[in-house]
Amino acid sequence: MHPFFAINRLSAYLDGDLPRRERLEVERVLSRHPELEAELLNVQNAVRLISQVGPARAPRRLVPEVLQALEERQQSPFRGPDRVRNMLLGLGVTLAIATGLAVWMNSGDSADAPAVDAAADAAIDDFLDGSTDPDALAELAADPPIAPDEATASEEAPASEEDSGGAPGFGDAGLLANDPNPGSDELEPVEGTAPAGRMEISESRRLPTPPQNAAGQIEPFIPDWDKDPVHAESGSSSLLQVAVYRVYANTPDILRSLHDLAQANGTLLTDSMGKPIQIRSLSGGDDFASAHLTLPAANMEVFLGQLARLGLAVEVSPPDAEAERQSLLLEVMYKP
Amino acid sequence: MGSEQQPDAQLPDAELARRARAGETDALEVILRRYQDPAYALCLRWLGDPRHAGEAVKAALVSFAEQLKRSTAPPLVLVYQVAIAECQERSSARTLEKAGLDEGDEARLRAALSELAADELSVLLLRDLVGLDLDQITEVLALSRGSVRSRLQRARLKLGRLLETRIDV
Image 1 (cartoon, rainbow over the protein chains, first blue to last red):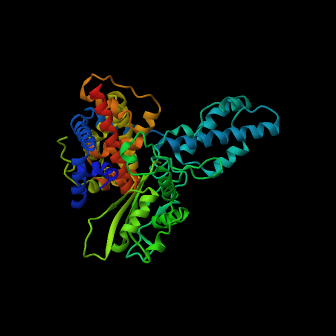
Image 2: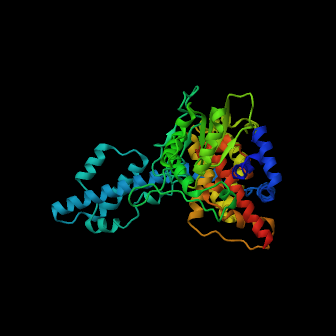
Image 3: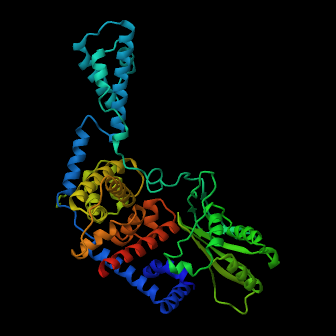
């Protein structure tokens, strides 16, 4: 296993989530790369520190206070979430102001000020309680209980729904808020064996829409080789970024990307194999993609040579002299 | 506590949630007590300050209790969704205080955590502090399993390096 892969398995290794073969591979790499062993130690220490120092007891009065707050909200005429309350308040005030202004502009004379507050308040309260009678609203509009002077003063009252401070949902404006095009790149699992040349997706995944420049072109991923020497070992950056671009752009078929890439570099990938390559699975997160490929064992060496020229790091399962076909795991890391 | 009407504290979340939705305050109280400590710890480690954490967790639990009535999400998922949203909102509204380098493990941890991005922090705290498994985190954060795994890997690596730096200094 390449250190490129090992370092990205340290967390899963620590949790015991790796299949036996991968665990042994990680251990083999760890024994050869002391810098990786130091990383593992750091991660272990961090996890230990969080589990030891992190837990804390909530304040003793927390639950009674929460229950009390809930009870107070139940009794309040402003029941329901702040967002709804503010929205209704805004609508109520706007309605009262609009009707007042409209009639004032039509009649030209000042309304009877003392009757204003009580009627408007009652209308707003009814509106907030959800008990507004449509007939009463119509009547209110026809006979606006608000004076022009107060109408202008009321316009300064906060009636915005933007200050509701409602918690963002995770499916819309929460942690996925950075995705400018949510849902469009969702790939659903495909059951059964994928036909040759097509892929089988092992799990649902969401890949972010890649950043684009002013011309609408997708910005290439440029690895920071100097900063991360482990990744630097995986090869040429200029070619890797093309492959990453393909995955990043939600082109689901990594093999096709490789094929295009190979052609762009004057190398025929699939054709030189003579037989189709099957992608057994494709999985990915928001900063990586990996594919399991199976191809004729006789072609493996050629294929690996081509991948190496493309600058892609590849992990190959232990060779099996008896096997006609061989598997390899291809991983591409990128930064969102 | 000690109330005869108090539901069994061992009842599963789903049953307690069903009763709470039916208006049983005692069931709601059991759920709140079940999640108050981990939710508070999450807020404390996220915000780094007991007073802010206390305010955040109270607001989160009130919001959780209200949402529970109309949501079909499991309490475990809902409570951490609300708590994280509360922490995100509060942490973006103020500058996190940075701890000194020689104030012990807690301060070191606080300082290192304050340097993680929100998406890293959420996964890390849910996994290593609260103790959720990957599937549960996937549900709370509405992410794919692969994303959770890679974010956890990234967050742990980063935190490990930050803590190591603080030891060395």
